[in-house]
Image (cartoon, rainbow, N blue to C red; front, side, top):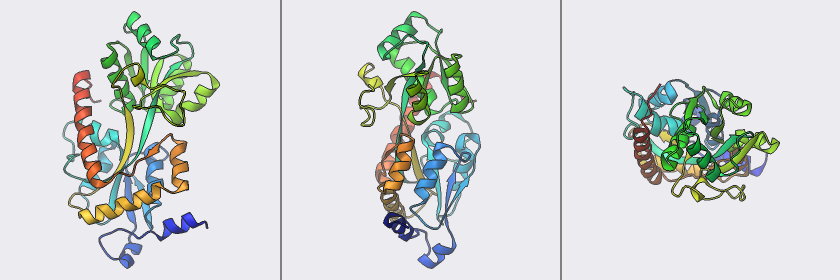
Length: 312
């Protein structure tokens, strides 16, 4: 066992009870999506910082089922690990939500940010963002862009692009990024905002062409890939993953958990796992995460209203 692993195992269990009781009751990390996806990966990496721990997948209703469970939990070590969609997007698309995203949870930390990449099928003649905009304007409604779901970050990335460039592309939602990518590769759709991790192999093979990343600045790992903002000033869209506790969690406890998240994010093992999905560790403080969440909630709400996006 290496020194980093020993240090991670030695991190104190951060529950309401003492260490002895905590060792008997593992921290529950609720991931409101099926196993194997990016949120599940982030959850399992983050949970390694608190031992013993247990990751439980509670999929359904765009993440609302698992999140609702945490919103009703006692402060006994039950945590919510979720992406931006379930916490600051879905509430604008679904009626009768079982919780209030801003008041029924205790913000603990934004764990990682994940940029998206604007990719096109190899047959699309556009070689950069400016050429894609010109193509879309010359052929209104002829280009289609795929997304993994209605209301997810890839969908909203496309809608923001359309609004800011005054272009008309048809949104084609899929049930997951896998089917969306297959149709993009096959030419059924021509454009997609996707994660770097899932598109990288197809870009290397030449079947897809990467035009830009959606971050405000170029990525250190991809310095030759421009940002959308270099052509469309002010454009930015990333997805992110964060941790919340139940309501009324003591601030001191939230701070201690965040400190464990920060230690976890600094380990070589965690950084390697996050790098495999193109993620940038953040490990923000509870107060910074609370402010960020409110700002994102308002930003996505405005975008959803302006784009007239409706839930399924």
